Length: 266
Image (cartoon, rainbow, N blue to C red; front, side, top):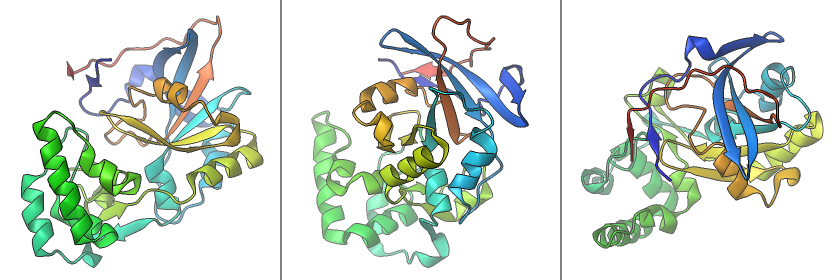
């Protein structure tokens, strides 16, 4: 399946809608197993460390929710709410992070291990010997066309580190790393129990989508769920749309939608 790259903010004014005091942007249809799903990117304020994710759901999602909808949540927002964060000033940069970061692959989806402070954080989490081994195996894998071995060895928690990105649209993320959320399945189940909204927490970018957790109602449907948001409808810029409502519209006509002009396909 070809990957589509976009440039800039996805929130086109023509796709903007207001309903029940909430703002969302239509992100078009995704057809999965012959079912037509319309996606709505729900706009929020910039979520700070320590906010209550249940209050966010109540404010921004509950007014828009219809029975049968599925809620996709950015893992970064849950990490911020849980204070799963590390400030750059608390990361002491060492030799190995400076050295190894010079050989890391740069990606279009954001900052990777070419950022020394991010790599230093990984060394602090996993230990230098495991990081060295992952670096060697990752480099050898690239030579034979196998990518992603570095993250496969070190784990999803390393792949899920976000922030420490000097080019982020938000100043907060220039100096802050956000770690993967704790107990994502439990978070989703809490949302399901309180609001009756089936939820999943995703680590999504313009390269791949990973389902970190979901409520019991959605268990076993991970590949189907990934296909619903394969084009990363939350965006990669300053959209402030960490929540995506996914709605089966059956045979109803889809809302008017202005397609986003893609940069390239890869």
